[in-house]
Amino acid sequence: MSSAFGIEEIQGQERALVFLKKYSSQPDLLPPLLIFHGPEGTGKESAVERFIRHILCLEGTSCGNCVSCRAFMHHSHPDIVWFPLEKNKQIAIGKEDNPEEFTIRWLIRTRLYYRPHLSKTRFIIIPDASLIGNEAETALLKSLEEAPFFTRFIFIVNDLEQLKETIVSRAVCIPFGYLPQQVIKELHNKNSIPYFPAKGGSMVSFDCPPNVLEQISQRISGNLRQPLDYLRLEEWILEYKEEHPDWKEDFSFKDFLDLIGLLLLQEFSKSDFDSNLPKMEAVFRFKEKLHERVHGQENISLSLLIHELTLLEQK
Image (spheres, rainbow, N blue to C red):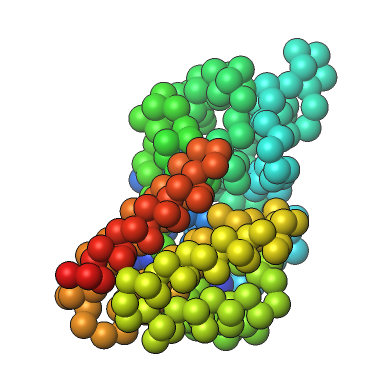
């Protein structure tokens, strides 16, 4: 049972494993706050689950047989406080009198200072720490500084920049990076999820319209030999945008352009890698611009990319 859900099963996150193995072998060294940070879909939540199960296990091995492991597997462990994740809903400080469940005052008054029931440690997990409200953060800071020795916090966040320095400075930060393609492929196959080579280094999927990947591949694969080909690609992209005005939340025009960027990188890396490196760098700059969240940025970024690629193709 332990090998099925052990820390050693975490793939593609060697830097994070250095921290996790250290603290799992020496739980007395656990700091009051750990922050698991990195891109969405890279295994942070799964790593947290494996880590806390290992620490809470009465055998210290994720044995799967002790009362702690059994409670964990049945999602009923009394020493785990896992805040629910509700999209865009802030974690509030709570009312002064009779605070609501899963607010900071509720946590402090009913969970924080009570000793664990089964294990030596109680874990408090906030799955998106960027949602902690300002008042809640102020109350939480004092709790972090004065937390009892048996209570440990774990925050999960995509980007450390989403947290205030007052929080980050009190934590040990555990970094997660994008997953290697081989790991992505293995995880997709293991979970019977369709895989395609242009998938980014994350397990997050988007609702890609039928045949759109095939259409993009047909436009890019082996068809970018001269400057005019890039201009034709841009023309097709803009026509596709006009013909499909109802973009979905899970597959926006930005996602469409992101997918094109991934397929361009795949195409440029197929052969003559060194010569194509300037083109790949241009695509990376394009992808960075896409995520700056500037309204109307997509078309401008696309035009700049195509212009740069046509100039590079002429050299």
